[in-house]
Image 1: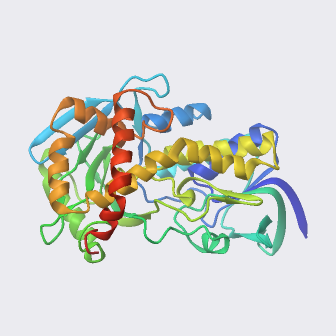
Image 2: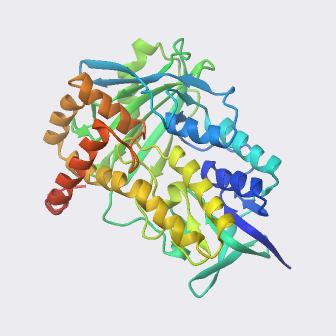
Image 3: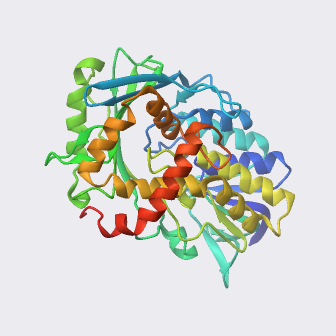
Length: 406
């Protein structure tokens, strides 16, 4: 049996749900497929940047269930800087922490209310006619679609079928998190420790985080980039335990409430569109290499894909690729190049001292960590990033040749 929809979406996380909401509200017929059951938990840091809050507001998602965050506390060795989110004309001066089980449920519930048909515990795979995706197969049925949106997160079978796997020579990240009770669960600042060391004492390009959830618990985790020395032998559980030792006393942490769980952070893709399909969010490599964050990019790219299809189905994939490239590619490319730079321990040590050394530089770091900079950004932070991109572009061949041994 074959049925037809305007938009078929593989994946019901934030990016897929945002596409479903936007498409259904614009009158498109939308069908969403996810292998997991409703209410599944996605391993994540749970932090929402001001950019993510703005995207959720664009989707008319109420954040009353989320814990509001006013800024970021950055720690590098003995230096501590607590900064408020900046006031801008694009993003609100507030972020949030919203555990993914509840965030994802709120988004997909809104998609259903908008008219999307969601099929849980159902694996969908793209149907290819040459290089064109004509829809998906699921549960033995074929669903033809004017546009198939891939919102599958880290690359897997769907990405392999479409040639949308990670670019092998580009960096990626790994992260691990758990939850613990803390009397500081209602703190209004995210906390990021930028000075981590592995089991051998090697500085780690990444950070440890404490994200207060406002519900009696905090999300505690660590993340690292693949550009560090001996990355393949990095033990994430050991790194998390070491970081936990640093924050145990000041946060008065209780025992872990669940087994620590790890995940991969894709930061590139060989393709993010083709005839009849686009990839959004993590599946499109839209993850900031300098903080591992991608929920905001997922929400924005999901909405954009659906809106472009409704406006003009024939040009939507290519126009999506062009607009995503204009908005994000320069900043994300700079981040990937920067990750090769800080993969060298001596450069990392010097860079961290600079990152929080003065309030001016710390504010630029804040905007980078908050995903507040892209091609439309103005001001000192955007200027610094543009200059950095040019310098790193010239140094890129050397950085790759001399990258720390994995």
